[in-house]
Each structure stands twice: as C-alpha cells, then as structure tokens.
Length: 593
Ligand code: AMP
Image: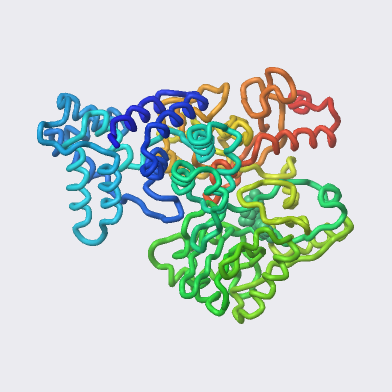
C-alpha cells in the first residue's frame, strides 16, 4: 500500500476540529487500506506500532532526528535547530527543511506503508551500544526517499508527536462503519477490544473475517483485560438501594490497580492503563510464584510501613517507578498486593461468574500462598446502611480512601463503568464531598513569579456519550514551584496549535494541549457557568457547570487515562446533590455576598 493516502488522511485529520469529520476521514482511509494492512494502519494513526501493553517504543533521541533531517535535506544541524526553534515541532521543521527538495529522487525505493512500518519497527527493536547510529541510518533511509509531506509525518511519528486526536472510541466507530456498514455494531467490536486491549487485532479480524469472528475473541494470558470501573455514590443507603438490599463491601485501598497475569513460568503486571509495569514490582513476581494455576487476578498494590505493616498513601508508590535502583526501593518502600478479583484460570474465562463465585475462587487461589505480600482484600456482606458505615469507618482508620460496594450477582464487565460496582469515599475537609480527576486541555501563561511557566490550567471533564472533553474550571492554586516546573515540562510534549477536536470550551487560552494529563482537584462547590462546556444546556439553556475555588491537591493521576477522568454526568450528580443539601436557591454569587 502506498504511504501517500495515509499521509493525505493525516493532513486532513490534522486540519479538522470536528470529531465527526475525523471519523469520516478515518472511515475513508480504512476502506482504502488492503485488509492485511488494517492492523498496521490502525496502530500508525494512533502513533503506535503495537498495542500499548507491548510497551514497545521507538526510543530515538531528538539530537539523532535533527542529524537525520540535516543529512537528508542537505542543510547543517544548526540550520535545522533554528528552524525547529521557529516551528516548535520537529516534524514541521523537517517539512520546512526539506521544502526545496520537491519530489523524491529518481532511484528511490517506493514509499509504502509496509516499508515505513517495518523501518519504524526496526528502529524500535534496535538496542544496545551503537543503536542510536543505527536508528539514525534507518530514519535517514526513509527521509531520503520521502516527499516533504511524508517526511513531516515520519518525523512526527518518530518523535511521538503525531497528534491527530484519534481516540479508541473513534477508531471503533470508524471500524463499524467501514466494515459492517452499521455504527451500531461498534458494541461487538468494543466487547472484543475490552478483553484483548488490542485495536489492531480487532480491526484486522473484522476486516478479514467479519463480525462473527470478532464475537469469538477470547481472553488470553498476557493480553490485559480493560478494567471494570465503578460509579460514585455518596451514602450507604443509596448503595443498598442500587444493590437490591444486599451487597459485598470491600476496603477501597489507596494504591495502584494491578492486573496480574501468571503463566507457568512467567509473571506480568499491567497498570490500570494497561501498561506493563512488571519491572516496578519485582518482589511481587516472586510472591505469587507458589500459585499453581495459570491465572489473571486483579488487585491493588499498596505501599506499607515496614515497621507497623500499615497501609501508606498512594504517593509512596512513586518511589517504585524508576529504571534504576529498584532493589533499593524494594527495601525502603515495601508493598503488598491486595487481590479483589479473578478473571481467568487455566485457559478459561471466569468473567461470566458472579461476584460471589469469583470471590470464592479467588480465596482458594490465594489460600496456598504463604507470603505476607499477598493478601485478600478485606470484605464483608452488608444488608443495612449502618453495617456499611461501620465497615467504612474501620477502612478509613486503616488508611483506606473508603469502600467499594459490589453487586453480589454481577459478572465482571470489562471496560465498563456502571452501578454493579460503586465507590463510597471518605468526606474531605473541603466543602464538596469528593475530589475530581480532570484532564488538562489548555493553559494561560504565567506572570510575575510564574513567568515562563503556566499560570493557570484549563481542566475538562469527560463526556462519555459524546466522547468529548468539556471544560469545567481553570485552576491556579495548589501548585508548588516544583509542580510548576514539572507541569511545564510534561505539558510541552502535548502542546498543539489549536483547540483539540475533542475539547469543548468557551474559554480563550494561550496554549492548548492534547488531552493526556489527569490531575486531582478539590473545590468548594459546583456552579452554573456561561463559559464552561461541561453539561452544557443540561440544567439551564446556555449554561454549563463550573467548579468554584478549585485547588490542585498535589496528585497527578498518571494511573488514569483521560477517558477515566471524572465524567460530566458525575458532575451533574454532584451539582444536584449539593442543591438538595443547601436548598435550590443557593448560587455562587449569593453565597459569596
Ligand atoms: P477511582 O480511582 O476513584 O475511580 O476508584 C477506582 C479505583 O479504586 C480502582 O481502579 C482501584 O485502583 C481502586 N480500588 C481500591 N480498592 C478496590 C477494590 N476493593 N475493588 C476495586 N477497586 C479498588
């Protein structure tokens, strides 16, 4: 397949701010793609070579890319650096530098998707001493034969800066339309994606074998399952109402969710975002060795106080996220894995079993493990609100965030947020009962002490139905100098030159970002807002919802994907609940006055 139609589609997608148009361009591209190439094209448009859980990255240093551009454009490195400074994007700089070049040379090899993909793949797999030089040669070989537009996207891809804004859900929609002719079939594709976490494979299957083949995709060891998620509620009464009077209540530990895959001799750990994090917790690999079966289990890894065995807060786990010195961190920051679910045993899915059946099975699996790093999460069965409240008080005393309440008859619903699991969190000392996890989508430049950094960030909630990020507040307090530095650096990687097509807001910003980074905030209340887009028109025509007195709590939620952020529906619920407590006349202005 020629690389040209892919590049043309990239150009169209880059220009649009409409999600609908994005889907249409994608459908057109998928239809043009030969079925055997569908998986590769699916990965490429998302800036990947493989599904996330493979953890394969190109690993190219910026300096090398500058050298590659210099050598194939016939300019010198300082020239390229100057253009780069002007454009702020190395792909655009490559395009600029290559401009006089026009078409590729007479003896060039044709630029096909196969060639581009396999070259990228070789770049990713080259490791060890001298690897940067090899990577440089590979990239140059592509650039030498590339047109200006092709060169631009080759470099953007290599630098991880292909910011087309194509979310998983957009791809699923486009696949349904392109290969089944009906968007409603997206659900079948989504189910397959939920148990495989591999869009490329799902795409290829539907393109080559049709919908029935997609229906039969099964859970496989070492392919992570997309996690089941919980809705939030605020009272134990509400929990029991939702669960028909009887429910399982578990400790909600404040750690990192981990999906453990254990084969005969291999163990892999996946984060909630389905990234491989086995290397963060080598001690856990050893701790589960004595489990005889091949299993997929879920649990929460929590840091513990080595003196007292007590649970410590989430932040303590940060010490484990490092490449070097893991041994030392294991000593100084011990952890325990607290299991709460089992999804697979010896070749068979257990997701269809009820919660109670899975819990019994889990207990049996863990019973044989004689290691204090492996625990079964505390649980009780409750039929009265007081029982939940008492269990919750004990959980909080033991360092938990609250409790998870689970429907006893429910199967495991991969990738879904629903009321089969609900979370009840402790009250915070601020006025709103709960924290919110929001996505950074824009920023204002700082002034004075914050000059050269961002002064305030625009945050958005996630609208699940529309698959859009809708602004809900600007936040400028709660940041230390260290945070300001860190945010500036991290956000730099996600800067785009206009509002992202999946972002809605009435606010004008100095900088825009791809929706990537999730942070936790608290606020005093939720008010109606004429300028924010969250829940626009849901409560009053022309108004959305906004946070009042928002403050960053210090927690960067890098365990959450942007789609895991607090939803606009949750914010509407929080708003209504606040009205119930305070009476319908309460507004921000009145309170302040
Ligand atoms: P939240 O991050 O507030 O949306 O809450 C959901 C998260 O709570 C999950 O992703 C887990 O990391 C964590 N968690 C802690 N304890 C449990 C439990 N017993 N069952 C399920 N999830 C739990």
